[in-house]
Image (cartoon, rainbow, N blue to C red; front, side):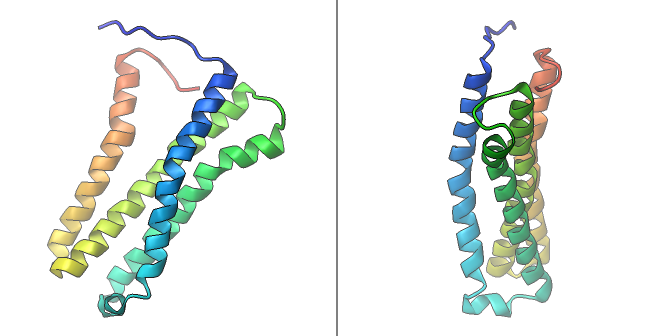
Length: 157
């Protein structure tokens, strides 16, 4: 099936990247806020230490995701102020893509923690966390890369 497509200018591409980052960042920041206050909940200290450790790891993954999501703005303003280059587009695009991996890990770990808090079942918690991770990686990486290959688009910028 042939799809109609059109090339974007560098300025349009950078605008889209900024728009994508603006869409993702508030959700990640909200997640970070909920994660940060969870440790002050009375039930948190009743969780097994390995579950608490998973929560701390999820918090660290969210910090990494935030750093990667915000990196394009810092790069543009500090490395290439006042212009848009193909290199800036590539760095920014990859940064946003790479942010999704630690975000998927953080969400999966948080699903594990929540399911453990609710069910106290290690098995159900593992199934929930692994299922969430598999779903997110499949939708955010596997399917898009498969589609890119199937559409014959070659490498990303």
